[in-house]
Every structure is written in structure tokens, then in C-alpha cells.
Length: 546
Image (cartoon, rainbow, N blue to C red; front, side, top):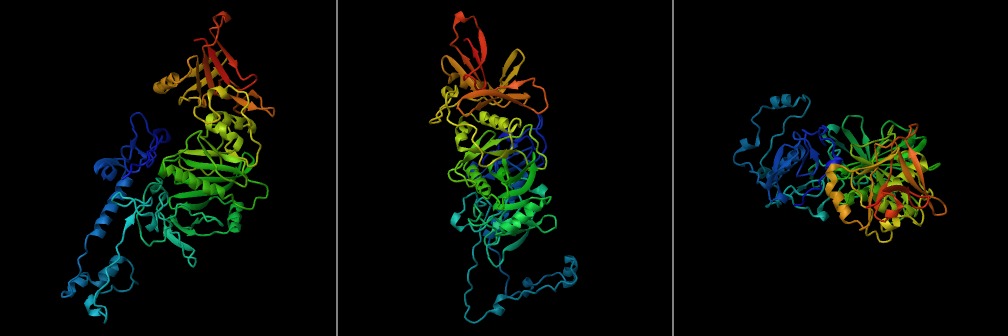
């Protein structure tokens, strides 16, 4: 009944099934059932969808298969099955000789076929009327019935997983481990491949499988390809032992039926870090998330708060609130044993090393832990915070790891031109940013480059600007080998520094924003001038007489 969340074209450079790269001739196609992006070959089927008034629409081959299976199963369950005639015993018996049945099964030691006997012959006294068979219902892992209706949440006792098949999570304390076979990875890259689950099967349906006093279930390989077991309530000691041993494969935690988290301890840029990676965010239109968290000295417990935040991001994405590059998510309570941790700033990796990391299927984002004093900049001007982190840890353009209990890089806003360009109090307005706009600073030449397909966005920003001042934010310039950075010192004043790619000469320097001002006087003799504004402060601004 509800249209799916569409994956933006910018987050899908490749087909999300066969991974073919899109070109000018190989176009993108959105599946009307799951909202993902595929090539023409992988999105060539047609299906009648309820939210489109049962009109035929283009769907991917996986959704078509799932919908057809669901429809056939629904028809089979709704159609009355003919009962054998008690007066004709031949209807109860197979016409195939028993020896041929055994040979066809391939198991010579199997027991002989069972001959069915009419129920009337075995009727017991006192059972005059047989009880009606319990009605069965099926639904997809996200709670949608095959006819498109939303299943009753109170009746959902089971759910299927999407990216790794149906996970059998037992809730019986006497049976902590249950088995299930998972399809091959190549058939399950799409996390939206819904699995039909029957009432009574042991698959956990809760949105959050993380217990308050323990760790979430762990997915364990049995050694057979595609075969796994799910262990509930793993002990902290055994988990830490496996992680400290540093095996080749990460531990896989089941956060809910559709969301997994892979965890491994890695050595990244000479820092011992936890590597948390999600798998299943793509199903709700969210880029996968990677969080590198520097380990504390003698840390003996896995930081479980990361799991809870992954589930929160998943729930937000279900509601249509996704995070993208330079987006943020904030905490409303104590996080990682500190009230000073404010949230995460999400960035797309550029020049940073990704060696030895557990990476998900693209697109994905890295989350960087930020302090509460830094959250206003994450809201108003996130590129400044990203570059300031890069200057702090001497990594261009920013680090991918997070450090707990560090000193915030920004304090009180103080005297800055940003107080005029953005609202730091109520966040009612901010500096407009045109996607793709970059500022190039070279010797005796400064260029503002605007993509030709962003004309409407640029005109919108100009129409909303002040009569005498036109200001705009710039995106991170991947062509530049260095970038100007705004640094706030202990006195609250701002100064300008530059960070660059390691061991590479500076040729092109990027800037974060520009200002065109009509306040220049004709008597000054200047047609234009560029200046580093905010006293001894932040980024490059261009002042031009209008």
C-alpha cells in the first residue's frame, strides 16, 4: 500500500544485483517494489502493485520472484484442498511401485513408503467432529502481507532476514542454538530480497534483538559453505577472546532480522580500533555504515552502544530519514559512558587508507564521533568540522577513526562571519550549498566551478541572498591537493591553516565558502579583491564589487 524508499541515483553507481557500472548507454532503472537501482536486464519484469492501484510496473527479478511465490502460496492456502474419497482406497495410495520410489530418492536405506489409511477407519470414540485446521498466514520480513496489507504487529512472532536469508533465532532457553542454511552471497547481496516466513518458525521478529544486559545473537559458520548457526546470549568473555585472537573473519552480530553488524579489532594507522560494519541498511535506502572506534587501554568489554545506534539509524531510515555524506546523527542520552559525546558526523572516504578494514557493499559512509560542542558546526557547516578534524590528526581530508573522551575542537561560536551567514541559535537558516560547487585557489587565479546541471539550485540560492551580499558554501574539492582549515584557539579566536595530502606539493587549494559583497566603494579603485576574513581566521572569501 505504500511506495518504497527510492535509493538516490548518486548512491548507486553500479547495478545493485549484477554490479554492472552505469554509463551513458547503460541506464538506471528503479524497481517499483523495493526502490533499488538496477540495470535493464536485472529490472525487466512486470508486476501489479497494490500502491499503484494494481497497475503493472517495472520490478527487479528478485522482487518478481518473491511476489510470484507469495501469490502462489497465498492461492494455495486460500484454495480448499480436496479430501480423498473414503470409499475409494486407491486415492490414498501411490501408483508408483515402492522400489521405484526408493531408487528415485537415491537413498537405498530409507524406510519404505508409508501407505495412508482413511481417517474414518481410525476414528476414535468421542471424536465425532474434527477440529478445523488452524488458519495460516504469511508475510514478508518487513511486516507486509502478500496482498500488500500491513500485518498486525501484535501477531508478528516471526520475521525473515534479507541480506543473509532466514536466520533461525531460537527463543527457547533450553535450545539456545538453531540451524538454518543460508543462500550463497551472490544471491543475497540485495538486502531487500524478502523471505516468506511461516507462523511458528523460530525467527526473531523484534526490531531490536539487543538485550539490556548482554550482547545480541551471533551468526556462526558451521564450516559448510552457506550453513550457519545462531547463538543467543553469547558471553562477553568468549566474544572478547575471539576478537583478541584476531581471526581472518569478523564476528557477525544479529541486530534484527534484517540488520547485521560485523565486528573486528583492526590495526589502523598505528591505532588499535574496533571496526563496526553494518549489513542490511541498503534495504531501507540507507548507505551502509562503518565506525572505527579507537580502543581504550585495557578495554575488556565490547562497546555495545554502537549496536543500539545502528538500530536507531535503521528505524530512522524506515521512517524516511536517511543520512548522507556530511550528514549527522545526534545522541539524546549518555553514549559510550560520556555525556559529552554528541553524535556522529558521516563522511565518504576520499584519500584515506582502507587497508585491512571490514568494508560493506558500496555505497557506505564512515561515522566519526563528535563532541557536544561540535554539534552546531555539524548542523550548520559540516565541512568545516570535517577539515578541522583532519588538521587535528594530520590526515587529509579527515580521519576515519573516532576517539572517545577527547577535547572538543570548537567552543563558543565567538566572533566569526558565520554568525552573519547562519543561525546558530535556532537553526532557521544556514549557508546555501550547491552540490558540486568547488573553489579552486591557484597561483594568481581563483575559480568557482559550478556544475552545469545545478543552474536551478544556484538561481534559488541567489534569489534568497541578501541584496548586497551573495554567499554560498562549497563542497569538498577532490581535485585539490590541499584545503584551508578554520582553527579556533583556546582564546576563542579563529585563525587559518592549510592541510594537504602527505608528501605532495600544493598546487590547488580548496576553500569552504565564498562571499560576493556590494559594499566596496568606487573610490577604492578595486573591482574585486580576495581576503582571509574573521581577523586572523577561517576560510577564503571572495569580495567583488557588484
